[in-house]
Amino acid sequence: MTLRLTHEVLHLPLRDPFRIARTDHDSSAGSITTVIVELRDDRFPDLVGVGEGYPDRFYGETPETMAAVSPLLLEVVGEVAPDAAGLRAASGAMDAALKGNGAARCALDLALHDLVGKVTGRPAHELIGLPAAIPPTDFTIGIYEPAIVAERARRAAAFPALKIKCGGPQDVATLEAVRGVYDGPIRVDANTGWTREEAVNLLPQLVALGVELVEQPFPARAYRDLGWLQERSSLPIVADESCVGPDDLDPLVGVVAGVNVKLAKAGGIGPARRMLERARELGFRTFLGCMEETSVGIAGSAVVASLAEWVDLDGCLLLAEDPFDGLVLDDDHRWILSPRPGLGLTRIAA
Image (cartoon, rainbow, N blue to C red; front, side, top):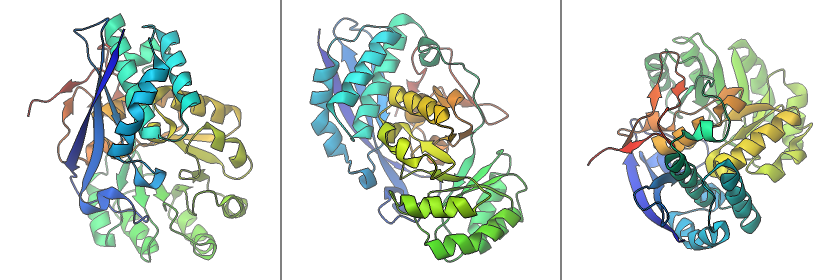
């Protein structure tokens, strides 16, 4: 038996330019780079599993690093039994063989779930025993002039929550402008962009504006700063850049109220599920996030979304055009997990 994996690097324009506080973020140029993989198994020659990994430079990944480590991942995975146990074994083997490289592991993990689902004729969430009912997603708006952010918030006002990127000198003005056109929950994501002084001075205004949570105000691993702010904040502080994989959970106990789990950081459906379940055991509030991905990455994330309290799975909605079809958002802004086998997606013809 031979598993064969092919990589396709996609450069996709965004619907609107998307800036965050971190200057290393690729999407600030108005487009994103993501990697789509196709997995074939000689035992099932007519079936193809599709996966995706978003190579974020912040975590040391590029399309080239993803391609470089894929042979090792295929080797350690070996022959995968086409069932839930086989998927767990493959995920565990990848975790044991390679630390970091979340996007590379994620791409193969999603492709395996898609392929095994197609082999068994079952949707991925059903295959691994998770429910189809999931929370609604919020919608994210990047850093811009307050008036521009407010106009984008007005266009997205039907969403049950908005996530507003902060970390600049106009944060309060931006949030006030958003509140002027939107009366639902606002989630603030500073992407490591604040100092202690800035954060603590902003807290009363965030509370007054009805902000629901604050995500990653300080640099990754700044545990003392995060804990210091959480002690002074009635709002939950949520770790994102400080929470990459399972080993990051225990050091955050007593430091922050919540953690943001992303498949492209954690390494796919299997690791994300284990992180979300462990986070709940440790008493964290759980946030399921995403990168600026196609429907492949978002559909994979939706598989485990039932384990999250807050859901931020809007990556494919930020694209000017999504190259995949089959993922549908219902009237309540919940992703409908497809009843079709695997992830349930099809590639749109060019």
